[in-house]
Amino acid sequence: MNSPFQLGVDIVSVRRMAEAIERSGQRFLDRVFTKAEQAYCHPKRNKYENYAARFAAKEAVIKAKKGGPGRYSFREIEVVRGERGEPLIHITTDARKRFKIPAEARFEVSLTHEREFAVAVVVMYLG
Image (cartoon, rainbow, N blue to C red):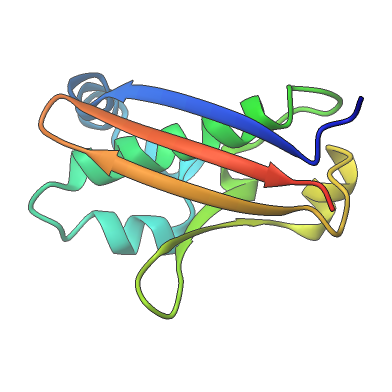
C-alpha cells in the first residue's frame, strides 16, 4: 500500500553548526545555504540556532524523500518564509526532476531550536 505522504525528521547540534561555520566560514555557508537563507540567519542574535534549524530541514527533506537517485545539493533545498512568517520548503524545478520528486508533491515543515539543538520535521505529500 502506497502512503499519501512521507515523513522526515532531523536533529542538529547547534554547537557543531557553530563550529563548522567558524572553522570554514563563508565557504561552508555558500556550499550549504542560499543567499536568502544567509540573509535571514546571519543578522540574528541566535544565528547558529537558525542555521542549524535550516540544515535540519534540508536533511529532513532528504529523509522524507527516502534518499533515492541523484546527488543532493543542500542549496537546492531552501527554507523560505511564507506570508505569515511560517517556514516553507522550496526545491528548484531541476532538482525535483533529478531527485524524482513529483511536480505535485508539496512539503510541510516545522522547525524548532533552542541553545543546544535544532529539530525539523518535514512531511512530503504525494498527491
